[in-house]
Image (cartoon, rainbow, N blue to C red; front, side, top):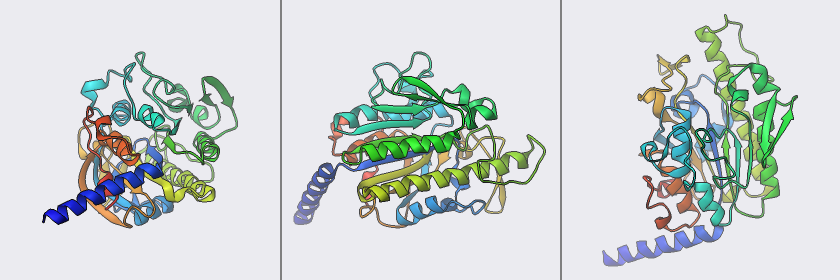
Length: 343
C-alpha cells in the first residue's frame, strides 16, 4: 500500500512538472445566456452545433456546472475565484486580483474579446484586470437597437475607440481572436472569448433564415435564439480551425461554458417538455450552464462527469493547469477541476 501511495505521489509530481513545462494555451469561450439543456451535448436536438458536438465527443462534458443567474456576478466570480458576496458591488473592485493577472505573471499573453461588463461603479477596465489586449464594445451597443450590434460596432483596442460600421459584431470579434492567436502562437496564451451571442437583441445572423412570426411572440424569440446559437457554433469552429492551422491545438485547453441560464422569454423543447428560460432566478433553468472541456491527448474522449462545479472553480483550474502553486488560489473559494479534465 505504501509503495502504491508513493508511486501516485511521484506520478503526480511528474505530471504537474510536465504540465508546467508545457504551459498550455487556454481558450475560454463563454456564451451569454445559455442553459446546458439547450445543446445537443446535453440531450437537446433542436439545433445543429457540430463544432460543440465534436468538442464534447473528443473531450469532457460536465453535467453539473452552475453559475450565478446574471451576467455581471458571473464574470466577477470567474475572474477572481471568489463568491460574489466577497467581491462584487456592480463592478470588479479596484485592486482585485484576477486570473489574468496571475497568468500574465506566469508569462502568458492575455486577451479579452467581446463582453467585459465589470467596469461599473468605478470597477476595473480590462487593462487594469490583467489583460494585455482587449477588444470590446460599449454596453449600450450590445443591448440597444439591432443596428447597433450588427453594423455600429465600436471596439476598444488598447485604449482607443474605433468604429467598424459594416462589421457584424460576433464575426468581427472572432477576427480579433484569430489575429491574437496568430501573433502570439509562439508563447502561452490566455484568451477570454466572452461572446455576446445568444444574448438579446434577438435577431437573425447573416446567412440564416427563420420562419416569420409576430414580433415579440414566443416563436419569434425562440427561432432567433436558436439561430444565434448555431451562428455561435460556426465562429467557435473558426477558432478551433485556427488552432489547428497554427499547429498549437494539441497544447491548448479549450473550455466552453455559459454565463447564466436562458432568458425568461425563451420557451424551448427538452425531453418531451417545454422549458421556460430562468435567467435571473435561482433555479436550474437560471443557473445550470454547459461546461465542455478538451485538451487533446490529455482529456479522455467522451467522458461525462457528475462533479459539482461552479464559477469560483475556474480560477483554481486555470492556475493549476499552468503550473502555479496552489497557494496562488488558496484565498479563493474554488477547487481545481483539472484532475477531472485529465480523467
